[in-house]
Image (cartoon, rainbow, N blue to C red; front, side):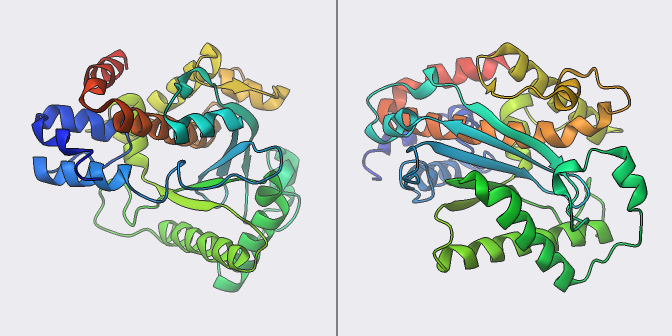
Length: 313
């Protein structure tokens, strides 16, 4: 494996950084560190080339989750079996195959019933009671969410947004951050248990949000108001990708959701950021897998293509 990738040693630091960003690898560090990171990523067992798809329809289902309690968003992307075959065989370019959004929703996991109607203002007002944040309640939420909403989608890969312990570089750890981190751990534990029990077959992968931002918009904003600026840029990118139809297509255009996607939903403009994050995360992972295949197949010849792609964003 190392011999196959020995050409990486001839690359400049800037070129290695471009490869790292295009393949979802940590792009900071010295040249030896970057080479090791890229080699590890390309030979990892947790890739599209190593995980089988379910037998049903042989489709490739990616479930991308943007973590939250009251605003957890998920995007279900589907790719045909030809995409996976292309990645495995390294004979054809999967870039011509466009992911399709099968399901795209935002839910409130702090409510134990009626997950599918969380966008209803009436429901929100009717259930504004004191929430419980004890581990037992969250364990129940995690199990219910997975078994009743997410796993029925038959995902082959579940991508979970990696949570931070501090928000916006602050020195303190917010209580709400701890709650989301606890729920993140509950999801991993429940999925592991279900897989060990033979009730689900698939892979669970953490995704760092800063890598997604770096891939789509060149990184997160800095300075005053950086969080809001980054959010707006990511929402704009998500809308551009959906409207363009070259990176992703939408199977269902429900009126309420489509209003948020296009930015024409009254009073809901700020809620689209969670949906946007789940979409960008899923699409970034798809592109990372394709780029890893290209780097493995074309070697040094892929550098110009990756550098040009970075320049177009």
